[in-house]
Length: 152
Ligand SMILES: [Zn+2]
Image (cartoon, rainbow, N blue to C red; front, top):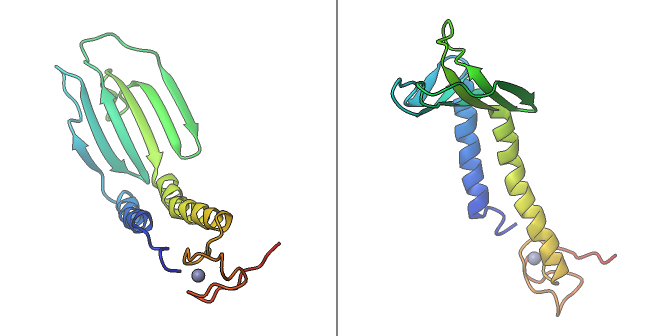
C-alpha cells in the first residue's frame, strides 16, 4: 500500500478532522468572521452555526432590493431576501449555507476517488495496483510487494 497516503489523502484527512471539530463546535457556539453588516458598503461574512457554514452577503443597503429566493437541496441552502437575523432588519441579503456533513462526505470521497483512479490507471498500463511496480516481466505476481495478479 505504498503511495496510498499521498499528499491529497493527508490533506483531505486534515481538512476532514478540522471539519468535524468545527461541526461539533457549531452546535454550541456561534462564530462569525468578516464584516457582518455595514450600512455604507458591500459586506461579506462567514459564520459557523447549527451544523452549517453560512456565507452572507449584504449588497450596499442603500441600493434597491433584489429578487427573493429560497431553496434547500441536499446539504445546500440558498436564500435571498430580508435579513432574517434578529427581528429582521429590513435589509436585503444573500445567504448560502452548506451543511458540515456535506463537506465531510466530500472530503471522505475525495481520497477514495483518487485511489480508485490510480488503481485503475495502473492496471491499464501494466503496473501493480498496490505499489505501481512494472509487471511486464512478471505478469502473475508483483516481485516488489508480493501482490498476486489475477487476469480476467
Ligand atoms: Zn506491488
